[in-house]
Length: 370
Ligand SMILES: [Zn+2]
Image (cartoon, rainbow, N blue to C red):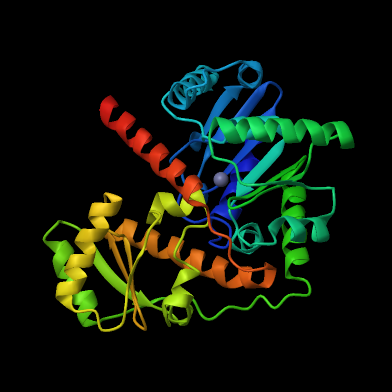
């Protein structure tokens, strides 16, 4: 499998760079004749080897592109998932990435999809579409936000078809608002060149420096109270701060710029709501706010932000707490940098609740299965 070696190398190249890939985000693929090899769901790009890829029949994937599915979203997603599973050649125990069908629509051998901080600074900004048009013209494809799953797949399919009609070739660069980027090319070297040219274009003429983001541990009466509160619920809590978090925790107006998620991935790791504690909130009031939060959202907050204090994070274990810290720090960077492109543009309530319900659905299904 000579085409898999370069794919493994580029997957690790971007997978080990937190400016491109955080946690389980991003996916890569290569086409070899009628076979599409794609990163399996739940496998990390940073350490992937040949066992982390699933081989699928491109012919069976093309049938999904043409088939009509039920209108009901739950039935439809289930039917598409089954067809995707049927397209697997080997090995059947791995689940292909949910973005597999998108990779198959791009006619280049290699496709690398990531959610890079610098690119999302534009994708999650108010002027995203305008900036893309000014920086890249009509050579690239820009897609406004679309709910993930089948809806995104169909929108992607029709936009790629339109592009191919106009340009007689697949787009090499596809920007997705409030999500990330797809890059396709004949070789992995070309993929790297495209990524770096996109970044240089974004950096040109802009001041894209940010306050230091490396977090240090932090202590406060509120953080200790919250740690105790959660410890009795079998959850771990730790608090951090950085010059970057200080910027957003200065007051409630600054907090507003990070109060809503920018991308579906942020919701997956940090949820969609974060609790802001005004300076001087008493322990009793904190306890009440935690309960109120749980009543109205159905879960305890994973991210609690203290005005002029730290980020108090809550998770099931230390490893997932670190992931929340990385993802939320990336979210602050995106918000800060987006000021250069018209200011932060969060997901809307409708878009957020779609992801929340989707998550719940997935969770219910996984429970039903076990
Ligand atoms: Zn993605």
